Structures are given as structure tokens and as C-alpha cells.
Length: 133
Image (cartoon, rainbow, N blue to C red; front, side):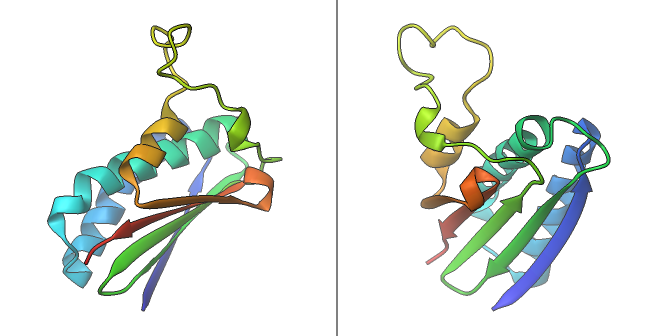
């Protein structure tokens, strides 16, 4: 199993690092290119949520992204320094009263694209898994 970690400041510009990070993982480890868009979108949503909602865009705080992969799958842990949240309290963005709202779709998108999602440490850590088999 190969591991790779990056730390990002809680600034919106930090998001730009993710695509290069994933492309490096893809090239270094010959990962399945067909999963790249789903992984990039999910990881971007999770890091964006960690920066904005977890760390309240406080640039002195970090978001840590840990990656572990094997031949059968790849997982990411996104860890912020916030107080966490309860994912069960997030409203369904596809409900009639929320369908036209701007924002509020990150958790929904992550759950739709990833094969497994788990929230730990009171919600300040999200683990996202993609099956590569």
C-alpha cells in the first residue's frame, strides 16, 4: 500500500493544488484514469468543505489530505481543524425547497461519486474510497 499526504492552508486558492496532486498520483502509481474525474470532483468538494465550513476560511489552519491506495482501491482522508458536523443534518439538495439553492451540494456529490464515504472525529474527518478493481 502506497501513502501520500499533503497539507493545505485554509485559503480558497489551495484548491488549485489538488489536480496536480492527483495527476502525480495517477502517473506515479498507474492508477485507473477513468476514475480521475470522480476522484477530483469528490476531493475538491471535501477540501472546499473543510476549508470553508470546517476551518472557517482561517488561513492559519490547515487541511490535511492523506491518500492510501492499493491495486483494488484508493482512499482519501480529509482532515480539518474545525469542530466537525453531523452529516445527517445536511438537507437534501434535491428536495423541492432546496433544488434552486446555490450551494449545499458538496456532501451529496461526494456520496454520489465515491464508492464509500465515512465521517469520523465528529465530522472533522471525511474518508472517501474508490474501488479500482
